Every structure is written in C-alpha cells, then in structure tokens.
Length: 68
Image (cartoon, rainbow, N blue to C red):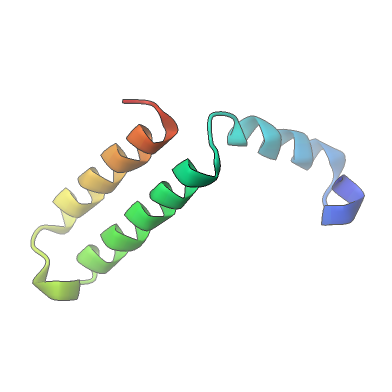
C-alpha cells in the first residue's frame, strides 16, 4: 500500500490510526461541516458570528465521528 500511495510505510500506519472511527458517511459529514463553517467565517449568506460557526463545526465533526 505504501508503495502504491508513494508514502513511507510509517506514514501509512499513522494515517490508518487517524482514520479509526471514521467511515465514508462520517467523513462526508465532517467535510460538509468544515465547508459550511468556512463559508460562514467568510461571511457567506450574511452569516453572523464566525466563532459560533467554528464551534458548531467542531460539534458536528465530533458527532459525525461518534464522539458526542
């Protein structure tokens, strides 16, 4: 796998550990939360408080992974 990805074997092990607890749906939810927060922080759609947008994204990401 490391050779196919052009990564050193130790890096593949690190990524595997980081991916535990994630599946395709959860990852898609997290990416969507980050995209929404990014837009809100940049003022998309007349968004209000950037701090709240970031806080909301963190909560959504934690829930997507099953952490709350």
